[in-house]
Image (tube, rainbow, N blue to C red; front, side, top):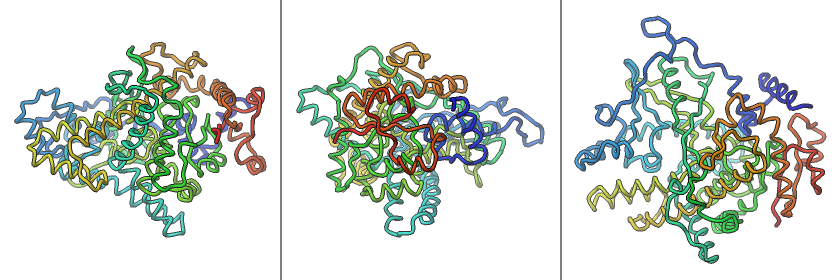
Length: 555
């Protein structure tokens, strides 16, 4: 079957609901199909007077910090403090971005434009009522998820374990101590190797840019014309950061310095948490792995997602880092992981796509429209977001900003805020400023390693497949538009398997056990049953039989 025939058939199966959402979200192919099949959210809206208008013709403007309604979002205590400190407008906007937007007669809150600091420590930045609004959005999903789990899993104890994993995954603040521990272990490895650790953050060394995720409006959402207008506003803004390339200052570490370092650190954290998971020993998925095969493999230790699959926004280590964190926070073990995978809950807990749809929530009573409300609920359940936080240096930068903001207050109030932040992290002993600095530095080491490995990997993909890439600069090794726009999709599909074969060849040379996997529609039920883990490949010549692969590290 040719690539064109496969694409046509996959589209037809999706239209007939024979390809699941979960399969579609697993690959750029599926994401493309899913969004392409979704209708344009609206071509003509209706104004309140009944006349038709295109939402693109309506102006949406931002409301700055001086606007009275800003206090409905941000902390009055912090706004007053910034006013007394005579901060410049630029400094104020860095701390408290303009997130209130309005169109004639209506105001919305752009949730995806809140800075990461305010999501890590909402009480420091946000109005008490608005903190409750955000908590309500997350609780809405958790209540629905709990009902779903209780239907799918009969064992009450396993229900609690799976629910705990989702609850902890959504609480990114509680991840900070575990990510700090990983960074600390990496720093110890470098110390033993006599490798010096740079002090500058990721954006000083590498190129971080923003992109526009030109998202569609979910076909199931209300066609409230104001909500559609706000959706259009949000879908056209470059608000999504990504690690784009180098900026001429060299890498933090050499490839040899970081070889296996993250795998070792993840396994150590799992072992210390008492889990039987070995997330650092996960196999590598190269390309789109048939769900039946993927499930049987992922249910043991998870998996790493190779950059040679061209899913650069997803990241290789995102899932394994998340599973490592859950091993510590939710006592995730192999039995619970198998329950998550086998009951089709992986996507809901670990692999939501925050770039998929725009989704403004129509207000009830006198509240604002909430722009990006569903995406906000997906953020911490997303490999994309986890990857973004670590590869762009946002996590450590946010902690630095939180420390700076706390430092604006009198000492007594500082101690209260640090105690609140520590409690949010799940720490028994409150942090002081020195311990917060230590945590920040540890997380920065983790960011350096993940970002360096990510760029090294993309660079090798470019060298092997230069025709895949439109961008030519070292500052921009790639941009999301290279792979996620309509025009580039066919080109991507034609060459996808060649890239996967190139990487599988490298793993084969390194002594990995490599298994070939066919395109999903090429499998019969009998063949899947006979080869649940794919087909063992022992020679380079055999690689050409398969488009996708699973590579197991040496044990």
